Image (cartoon, rainbow, N blue to C red; front, side):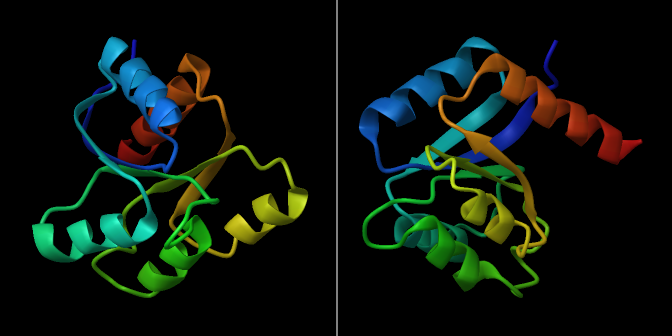
Length: 132
């Protein structure tokens, strides 16, 4: 059984992928609230103006306007955002991308699409361990 997360940000430009991930999360009651954003710029604007932060953030790398790397560069070093656990969620299997993700302290995992129940369980497992 999955432990429910309060708020998740899903930053993904593909509408079908967003629908599938959101449906999966809802089916398994992964999060109380799932907010979706089509690129890093829109998500960054929401972070800057909402006053509340997600418990987890899923981030695609290849997006128009502001890609995942640019988003990570923008929030790096900002103490308000440094505690948000981020999971890269990408179609990229390039080892260089995975290696690059390790340079960002709040990136807790690198998941290759499609996202599955096993991935959600592994994220929850990590979250439970951090609390103990």
